[in-house]
Length: 166
Image (cartoon, rainbow, N blue to C red; front, side, top):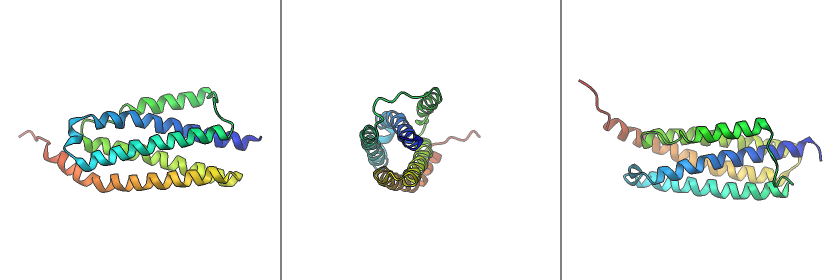
């Protein structure tokens, strides 16, 4: 096995870490009373949490098939994972609109990482990895579009509650 398999495994591990880091803040957001006021947002966040959990399961299983089960991370990878986990705690902002913007940003990065995995997997001949990355990227793109469509209404609602000092 050459360096190509190590590169693919590293990409898969990075995506697993990023997805795991996003799940907890989303689940916490679902427990807030503000989400109860926005059924569409609740549905979208539930869909996002479910999708990320499914992706983590699939990626973990796939990593095992690539011989990467139980891989130990390098110090640089551990630092990157710790930074992502720390950043994930701030995904939930004071308002739903701000949280949605944060989720949009985090998902955009995961979408880009999936595209990189897809590209590298194709370049190195790992067709099953490329196919999985393509499917995950397409699923994330659909959720990103839903968040993008929901943001104007959420921001309008947020602005309506802002008190301006006179």
